[in-house]
Length: 296
Image (cartoon, rainbow, N blue to C red; front, side, top):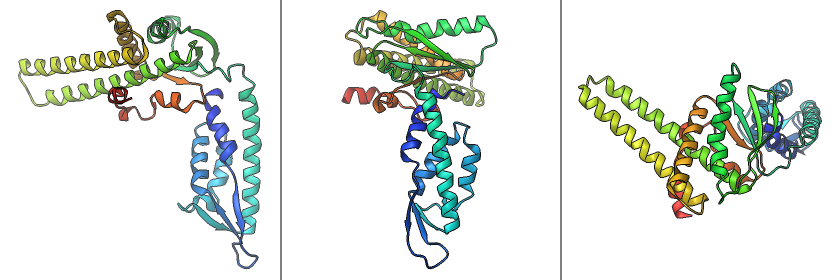
């Protein structure tokens, strides 16, 4: 279990998973009104992804908090007691887990990346990923205008999990932009493959099909070049062809890694930097940022 990845989720739950209730009256079977249910349900949903709170979450799901879609509900005295105990038990576990997470020497490094690689079957495959990461991250961030410096500072259990610092915030932002563009390129490749497969069902002549394939390849090439040029203009203080070539290589390499299941995640609380990286759970929704860069 990689606790550090869930640092923000745990901290958010500690701060916002609060039992908010109002005592209405001793008359009747439901003397308490509990509010803030939508946020509670959302936080518990996030905590469920960690996989350590399944029993606790099931206890919550058996209460009135989950029998309504509204933001508040009335509860009995007995259920009020049950809920108080459930919230207290959850917070005890969250506080303990958070103390474990924050004891790590990696917490607080503003230029830290978490890199999750797919399962590898041998050292040859691991060596290939090492070379890919060099092309994906090290080559673009050591540019003098970024002044990055890549170091592996830790590893964790999982398929393969590496903690890597990149030296500067500028380097971290560049990696985020590269991952975003790489996710876009991956999406465009997938769309092109679907288009070609559909075209093959039309029984087109070879010349026509080859023309469609060529057009798709040219479009993908133009998208990659446009993304690389935009990144050079936005993050470097130059846009020479060699630098753009390194950016293209980085994007294409990261796109291939994402396709295999790899994730590159910033370990920072800076929301702007977090948003600069793609949502790996919604890659099909990724859009180019070139227009936004031009308007910025």
